[in-house]
Image (cartoon, rainbow, N blue to C red):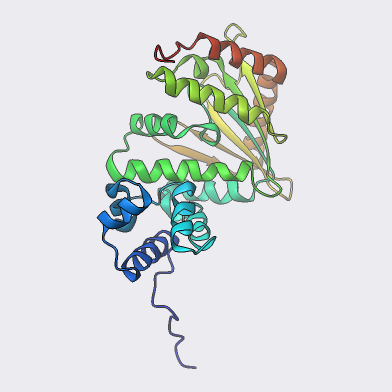
Amino acid sequence: MPRRLPITGMSQEPRERFREVIKELREGRGLSFRELARQLGWDQSLLSRLESGATIGSPQVAMGLDTFYGTTPFILTLWELAAADKKQFRPQYRPYMEYEAKAVALSKFCLTRLPGLLQTETYAREALAAGGFVGEELEQQVEARIGRQSILEGEDPPVFRAVLSEASLRNSLRDPAAWREQLERLVEASDLPNVTIRVLPFGTGLHGLNTTDVMFLRLLDGRIVAYTENDLDGDLVEETSKAEYLLRAYDAVCDLAQTPAESRAFILRLLEEVPCDPST
């Protein structure tokens, strides 16, 4: 049988295909970066970074390009595929990402940082930079983290339970406006029917997860997989007995935490404490 030849000759990798297509569309119109930036009202450097593969931008960028070129929703579809591509994550995290994409329920306990699925872009960038990411790799990992959040609002999204230690809510960003945005993101997320946020306040005593940041993923077959992590590494716990041990500790923490209504009120009080911009 003769070898099957590629039809388009373009890359089969989602991020690279996205880059190739937007470059091809621009060149097909005979536009320079400067001309395209002027017509779109965007920064020329963003367009350059899109075509170099340094970034895929936001969904709003993809929609803007779709509107300009009259290709709706082609570019946005390519962006979604690029954002969901597991190859953008470091190899050690990819097995977890495969489980996360298939999970029907997620449960998270956070010690000192907010869950990635609920972070704003600014919070994610600071957290990842603190973990050692820099330059283009930092921007790629920020995009990857923000792209993951779509699973909470897609069709038939998984249930997501998050228990946030008070420490994670007291360790604010340096920029008050950015911290306000992050707290508002938590309040908005708590309104989603599939998301439950509970706060574990100071003074509840020692518990089984005092030193463990963990995510639980319930799969369609009922199996539970756990993922523990720190700034340097993560550990996928697939052995049933170990995952169940951690889950029992998580359930005990839930018993100590505030109710969802109390937790929402707690976060709203924190919002009131954030200094306002004097210009407003």
